[in-house]
Amino acid sequence: MQKLKVMCSFIVEVEVPDDEEDGYSASFDIEENHCPGTGIVGAAVDALMKRAKEQGTCWACTSEGQNEIL
Image 1 (cartoon, rainbow, N blue to C red):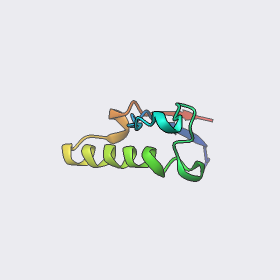
Image 2 (image 1 turned 30 degrees about the vertical axis):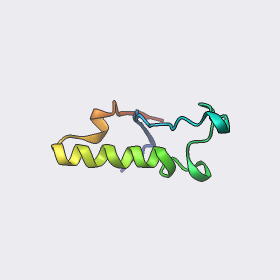
Image 3 (image 1 turned 60 degrees about the vertical axis):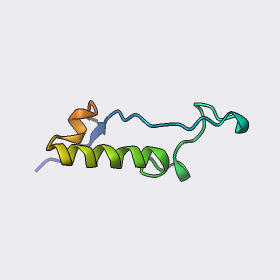
């Protein structure tokens, strides 16, 4: 059996707090410890998965998921 590496990607919208006092910008690291499963990104992915499960839909498809063989 052959093994392939596949890169899976999807798009998720995150809510970024208005934080003008601290100079928040789009380049701010929105994940804790550079881990995409934490912080506001992780929360957005969890919410997306929960909504999809409740609706009986595929969370990856609804977030424009794509697979690419590397």
